[in-house]
Length: 111
Length: 119
Image 1: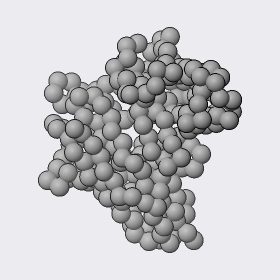
Image 2: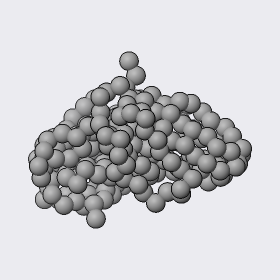
Image 3: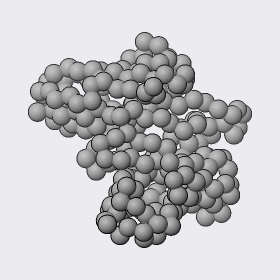
Image 4: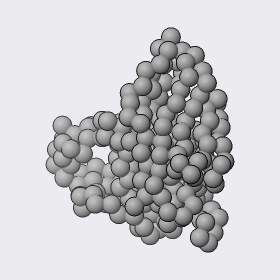
């Protein structure tokens, strides 16, 4: 069946460090891929998305590239800030119209 | 304007009580969802409604019942609350786009969550 696997946290980084959160997926057909962010005490917000292979989603300095050959959608940011501290969820939606979320990765950025 | 709203934001109640959580979306979406998020932040989908029909019904206890009076609202009613029901419940909505074999749901928009505490 379809699923999303993302690296377990928590992840702790110093400000201005490079961030990578790994995400791999299993799906049939042509899924769309998403990264959501959940700030403390809030709901999930869409961070970026990609709808076909080799697409790159980007927003707020974050990027992720849809890699069909490695079934991956890793999230990266070149220089994290304290305000990036949150839980990040990788997700896919499949042509069968179902949404699948990863288990979430907690990121803490320290000054 | 709030896109997806939920009430109440906090709900504290005793075991055995019956409670409801309300959700409304003003995005014109045709599908709405309820998720449960546990203390480890794991998200579990509970229900979704598309055009007033239940299209996903995961293996949740039948004490939980979704009710959709119209496509802008999806309420969650919970009977005989138990300690294990304590969690944050999120409502979400989305719209079908594309078509044919490449169709898939567009991104989901989430409400702010309802923190349920059962004592």
